[in-house]
Image 1 (spheres, rainbow, N blue to C red):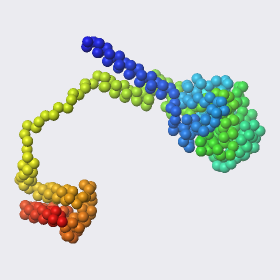
Image 2 (cartoon, rainbow, N blue to C red):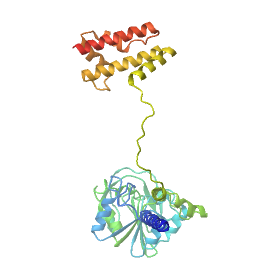
Image 3 (cartoon, rainbow, N blue to C red):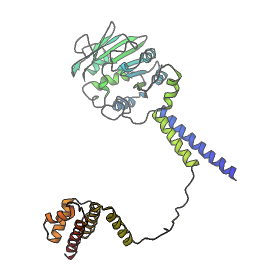
Amino acid sequence: MRTSRTRTGLTWGLGIAGAITLIAALAWISPSASSSVAYAPNNPNADGARAAARILGDQGVHVRYVRTTSAALADAREDGTLLIVNAHRLRPEQQEALARAPGDVVLAGTGPQIDRLTERVSHHAGGTRDVHEAQCRDEHARAADRIGAGGPQVTGGDGVELCFGDTPETGRYAAWAQDGATWRVLSTPEILRNDALAEHGNAALVLRSLGHYSHLTWYVPSPGDDFGEEGLAAATTLPLLRPPMLAMYAVLALALILWRGRRLGPVVSEPLPVAVRAAETTRGRGRLYRRNKTHAHAGTALRAGTVARVSGTLGLARWAQRDDVVRTISRATGRTPDQIDSVLYGPPPHDEASLAALAEALDTMESEVHRR
């Protein structure tokens, strides 16, 4: 019988562990339905890009959101588009791998370090935020006509079409053909944002750049991506310490505690060995105060007790402030507020005579409250 129960418990434990592991793995592989990652296609906030992704989806474009270089390379295809947001934040080994990705490539956001990804354009810092006209021959830029954006910009070599720049040598949009595919650059990713998409021709430029094929790989790099890092620890240990895995470990530990932990029995009431009357407790405490000559402490206790009893009689809340207590008791007794304040909050007694005088004053004031 005991063996059967043990097997049943073990089966339940393994089943719970397996279910939790599966849920954690799915959460690790697939991005959440909604996020707060900037420029992510599932971010509904102002700095997100869910509006553009939704419109592309309505036009028949399947948007695949990825956070790692490995996932981007696995999802990229010749008849698709790979969007890389802020490519300058990628390490050289990541850029070199993505440079060989198949299909069209769109870079949204550039910096001074993208030469491992492409050498056809260069970063150009600065640029005024304004409405910029296309002033180029690219059909997608001409369809957008004008965009609202700031800096930075890019410069390009032979065969690179530059549009929406402050000068003919600079642009906020660039396009060129490379190895049978088309590369496009949006020098700043801000036009992807939900709060900027509706400005001027921003939406037209974004949708035409990203919607050429029915499949779009939307890559927002994750700072924790260990692609290309050397050493077994970087490849195996770090993923085990990331938040989804830590959460799984915590749930597994809780399941183990619930499975193997001892269950507490019912609460048992136990009679006290000695019953002590309240009056005897009060007298005993008073003797301790007197023996140790803690007149100030005794005075504080007397005053607190008086305030508690009088407050209950007068309907004062337990958290009533000093001014409220003094004012209410003053109205009830007819004494001045200064007199009440002196009795309840005056200097502490320093000897038995002053303690006795305080006790008498408190008793008199309390009796006056009850008489009224």
